[in-house]
Image (cartoon, rainbow, N blue to C red; front, side, top):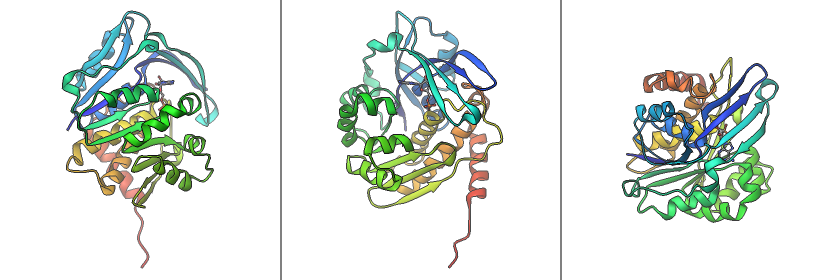
Amino acid sequence: MSVLVVGSIALDSIKTPVHDHVDLLGGSASYAAVAASFFAPVRLVGIVGSDFPQEHLGYFQGRGVDLAGLQVAEGRTFRWSGEYHENFASRTTRSTDLGVFERFSPELPGTYRETPFVLLGNIGPGLQSQVLDQMGQREFVVADTMNLWIDIARDELLALLPRIDMLVLNDEEARQLTGEGNLVRAGRALMALGPAFVAVKKGEHGCLLFSKAGDYFTVGAYPLEEVHDPTGAGDSFVGALVGYLAAHAAGGVDFAALRRAVVHGTVVASFNVEAFSFDRLRAIDRAAIDRRYREFSAMSHYERIA
Ligand code: AMP
């Protein structure tokens, strides 16, 4: 089954304690679409400027990503610049240049309107809602968000929550949105606002998954010796998660499938952070993901004591 992905498509400038790169392919939709494409056909909704390199479009097409919903507008592509500090413990945004993103209004081609799996990648919640407004029947809708929208578009975000099946956000955002310091209570508070499932990402400490029915799952991060660029970890995580569901839970998403989807998201995100931009994702395939999944499963397994 197909996945519709909406979000930002960007040119990122990334500074780490050892490297400085300018105008790399980035954006929440780019990472999510490529990650999902390892599992299922992807339909992309987004906007780029007339300066967007053709080679990046070729990369998306080469991954089988449908670009009928991509708008190419006169002007500059969205640019974001971030800096990572010692040990990647924190990141600061250096600049955001909206460019053509400022006048983005998602428009779904007719062929996209019945897409069963929907990933509302990180963009303003008003734009995420506009995508749902244009859709007919759908099977499972996942939304990502960020601290910026909790700050400046809280009401629109709260209006979106009853319309989605699953919310994915990081620990700080979960605390910020609910006012709850404890993540278990924050997860429960978020589900009371709408979605049946919530995943709370904890960066290098893994992820918590909750369901309204009371299920609970926790998984660590895949242990890596070297991280080069954490940009897009969250987006590739959620992209792989939804892609996995589209490929393997088409008959109905249950908690067991979601657990496997969260681990696939964790595995793909672990590849993504091993190199800048898409350098690592360009070099892997589904077989490499499956191998790391098996390895991760073996290292995470422990005996139940009767
Ligand atoms: P992550 O590392 O998962 O938080 O995602 C980083 C990506 O988000 C970068 O590639 C940026 O281009 C993109 N990004 C940063 N700020 C925004 C924003 N305000 N809206 C949409 N995308 C953004």
